[in-house]
Image (cartoon, rainbow, N blue to C red):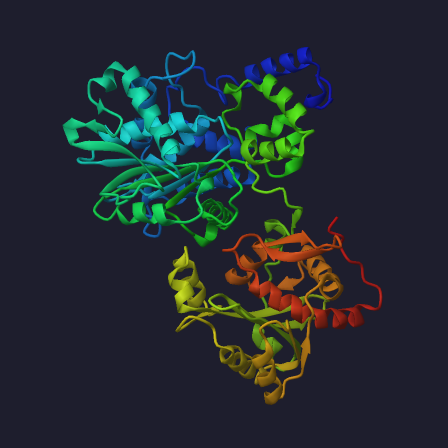
Amino acid sequence: MSSTNVLDYSFTELTNWWDKYKADREGWAYLKNPSPILLTNYYANMVVEGDIPASKEVIAACERQLKDLERQGTDDFPWVFDEEKAWRPIRFIESKCKPSKGDYSQLVLQPWQHFIVGCLCGWVHRDTGYRRFREGVVFVGRKNGKTTLESGLADYMTGFDGERGANVYFLANDKGQAHELFDESMAMIKSSPFLSERFVANRQEIRFPKRKCTIVPMSADTKNKDGKNLHFAVFDEIHEYKDYRLINVMKRSRGTRKQPLIMYISTAGTVLDGPLMDFVDNGQDCLKNYDDHIDERTFYYLAKLDNKQEANDPEMWEKANPNICLMEMVDMIGDYKKDRKNPREYADWITKQFNIFSETDELSFVTTDTILKNNKVLNIKLLEGRECTGGYDLSETEDFTSACLEFPLDDGGIFVLEKSWVPEARYKRDKNPERIKAWEKSGELEIIPGDYVKYEYVLDWFTEMSNKYQITKVMYDPAKALLLNKAMENYGFVTQEVRQGFLTLGGPMQNLKELLLDGKVIYNNSKLFRWYLNNIKLIKDRNDNWLPQKQTLSRKIDGFAALLDAHVDVVNKLIKQQGSRITFVSFD
């Protein structure tokens, strides 16, 4: 074929391209018959080596698998990968579960499904043999066989996971959605002579009498939502969930089980402050920062396009649709070419087929690679007596508060010394309290008793720092800062208000990005400050100027906001060092 974009092919060219695409992948990335071996680690290697197109998050998940294999069975990582336990549910689904729809005689799990099921079931504790993962997040585009996979896995967990009295739940935001998974599981059982002899099914529940196990559908609108002794649960399409009520009920019901597993499966959606956004956010954090060992008992498979531009390259669609070779791709491309002319239809494709949450005009501030480039370490004792500028960002009420000192360095770079505080009430409801405890242990953050951070903590920190360094000025956002600023002035600090808009922050923000791109920001590898940098996205204001904003409600940027305020002053000092000419990096 020529280098012409696939979207520009004629119908005949497109058909020929698609036949060749599938033929080239058959037997290794696309299977027509069950694999004779487990493909979990094979898939991970293929993705990492670039043979299978995958999102940055899926690549990171595969890298996580390979790194975990290298450190398995150690005191710090007591989990081991048991191939037999990984492969057993896959063999069960392919040999015992029969498809209830389509022209297929048996189910054939594809390599990406081997990866998901194998990781979830294969990682066990070296001593007890119990599963490592307590939760799994599977995020793929629509029509990728989620319902079939999870229904088959539920049948396995009910009768063949070795658990007596196992309670299995299909959960969804409404009753109809909950029954979709339940009905598929029932249809599989009725289609399989092996399963139909062992299960008893009706509209309310599916029972496995031999071990006294049941499968029950449940929705958010069910009056009695008390889960009992949960062994396995599947939450379907959690993009519709606006709160954690049903999720929390299920989590609390795991108490007496040795190896419970909850799975969340979904495409993207329009509820941008619900549980799914938190799960994806936590997954990205976990996968990007492997060495921090965050959330090691949750599995993540986040299949999506890396950006909207890839929607116009069908060869990239596999990133969000790992089951692409089982789809009617020629028709899909025709539908996409027609629908993309309609903004509403196009938005639906972007969200549902390609798993990109929103159509907002946004841009990442810096990449993870850029952040990691700034990995120098400086002995802070060498800075004692040097001039610096302070900055702080106060929380609304029950949230993070941050302060910083920024030192201009002789080589044109900067050193950032940060401190953050969080109230105990906020810490207790955090989804990752272990991480906050790690930041506290390293001295980067302090957990404050009560419901909010009193401004005196910030004042005391600046006062303590002024005994070591020459704080020439403290820059601050006037919002919420009236009392603290007055106290700072009374103590003797010189303070300056920083108006929060592009006119004031645009130049300093661009210069900070330039410094990061050049590897000239030293923060002594503070994990908390790195987290702040990871959380920044840029949005356009009404005048088409870029301004920083946190990516989601749970991802904070307070430390960066404090630095940006300080940099309004420091950038002028850097200009004086380097002369009047300075080049800013464009965000366009």
